[in-house]
Image (tube, rainbow, N blue to C red; front, side, top):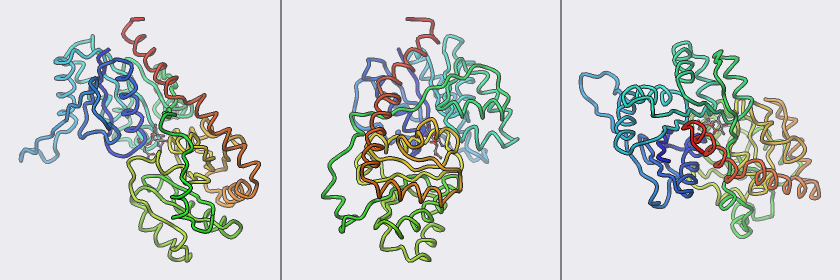
Length: 373
Ligand code: GMT
């Protein structure tokens, strides 16, 4: 198949999933065309079946706002014609589903559109009355719609009253790159006295509740000698640094900033913390699980579909700092329990969220969309 993929190319779960899926499809012999505003950051090495078509927005004086959406739609139509695309798979409803619809109007009905909903396109933007009708329209005009968890489907229906079918397709992790790595020597650099390591990775937006991470860590270290590694950057970083200083935690917290390849650092962690207020899936929890790192998370959104409580981590209500701290302490103090949850985490990520399995699921849906196979 000739497949066009559009996503946000910067750091973020939806871009990661779109890029990794494109790479898997290319490995399977499909020709994959990324149509994006920048090179997707996980694209990596050259592959003969992967093509990159940049969307360049011109800044004419007459425009107060650069017309990115129209330029993207035009580029999608151009690539669809020149490369004889069978379908456009767009990740994130706004503006991508709308741009794809416009491109389809330009090239003809044979171009099929699959839209994958990732979360904030619904759970945040869906509340914005300036956008909600447009998001619903984009979803309804797609030929096929998938979402990364059942909870996201529920929320899409509740919030936007969308009636067309939405198919659940979970996110995945590539077990050839995400597995427990031997990082003993590196671990000593962060925890030279053998302290346990808690980790949090996000875009530091309010929705991630990073201040809760600091509160949880503050409780845990009273009982278990431990360090905290924070990965990512974002608007709450100032507040987080202030909380760390106020609590006299500066020497126990390490900031690694934005990291392009977290597969290399995840094995440093003993526990992954993700206390989010909203999380349609929680890709970072899955990536940690694949490396044998149990996750302690909130029970927001799709997280209960990823992390099974008491099996491969612990889920506590949003804002239950004490509950998440106690669960972490329990896990870190009981080696037998820890090993069991770590093993279960690897098994679950390999079975339910295996890259091969999910790539085949998308491939089968493309074939259904195109009426082949
Ligand atoms: O987590 C974010 O804020 C980034 C966002 C994105 O669009 O990249 O992530 C969303 O999509 C990821 C991939 O499907 C999911 O794993 C995240 O749970 C989801 N984020 C939210 O729902 C807040």
